[in-house]
Length: 344
Length: 262
Image (cartoon, rainbow over all chains, first blue to last red; front, side, top):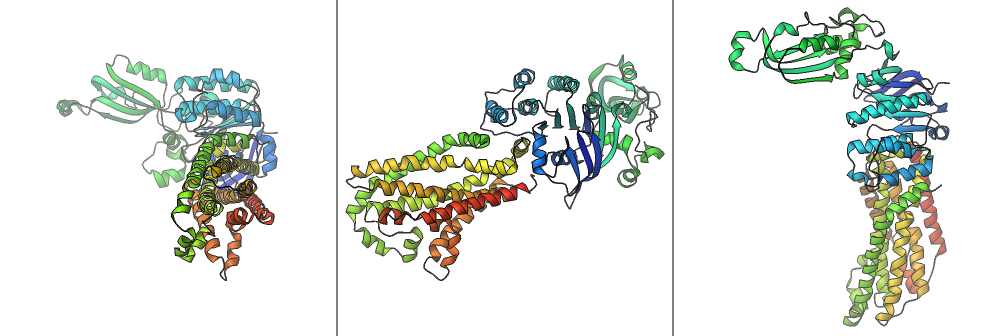
């Protein structure tokens, strides 16, 4: 039996179809990522699975319980942990008050151990909590009754990098114990690091469900750099460094603009999908004032790798990177539709 | 069972104690000023000077005795109007505020039915409802001899006991608003408006051809004058209030079971 089964789940709000005939299943013991840009309908699916909203069509089963039957779903909830995208607790209560309430209703098997890992300030009132602390408390509450299945909506947003790392390790250990995790994210890199399989949703529709290995291993990084001295343009030109897209450059000193603005720059931004080692090699020897390498926004990645013909036709006629393969939703193959993709 | 009611009740305790102290002070003030009113003027003459609708709205029968004075100044004004509105307002927040602020998602992820969430949060309103009825009767009972008056302890106890189903019915109005509107501020305004409108309808239509309309108002079934002046305790009226409360609770539970939390 699959832990989560969605069968044509649809939530039509009239003006917008938040989930349109979504069908997939999550197997026992896997970490399943639910990936999509903000507003794609991830939270709608999750809240329907928890019985918070009822689907307008289709249905789903969680741990074998029908989500549209409240009393049936209630039996399952003892074995489910849920962390909403922005968890919220009584402001005037202390973390301990909330913890005790949850312990009395659903039981407490392991809060002590969890509190050592994620340490929210239990004796302070929730109103004094930072976003990160609220989320830490949420994580403790999600796992304290040792659920079989955890449903996490954007679990790492608001956590500092150290905590994100700790959470990732924790989740992997949970998987070893047989826990199934279903979590949503809009960060491809995070999903790729953690998940066994991934479902991708966009504008309410399921795009694909794939094992994570077949997902692109390059999500794209946005690289920004500023140099002390002008750098020749061809150093980061797509023709000389594979995986560079949307290169934008500028010289920040007016007086030089006349002579070499077409051939050199002191500031540039580009999206990079190539081999990071090649990028690092290319940076060698440049006197950098500033450098940032960030995960590219998911929306851009979608446009580049999962864009449909509709999108190219209607939204961005100029976006021709995907070329004739734009309509291909299959992402399993290693041949990249992007120009100059190189295996990392 | 009742974990949530206990949790909510405990969180309401402090505020309810302050509320009950405030009302006890109001009671002390009213008892304290009664002699100067009584001695300074002929209260029945004063009443005759009021236009009839005012007497009707305030349910004034006599202010010449301590019982009549208390019935109007403390129980009609303080209990029927102020506390009735307060409980409708405050209960209107119990579900709507949790939904509004996203706390309901966490709560409903627990193995606890929606009907039980509504039920237990409503039960927790017993904390303010009972607490306000503890300190005030003591203050009045002890205060009366101090101004050389006496008041029947049984009547005093009765007026407070009978106010409990009345206050629960008002809270029930708030509860229904709380599940229908998922914005706390709207639910609270609606609850206040409806409760006050019911009070006006009941008191203004009394004695007219439309008197029957007032039958839906909880205010019809709790009359401090009758209890304090005539020692008449209408158990039937209290039963109607209990029925009204249960009906409002049930309607709220049914509504909340089938609505989307958003």
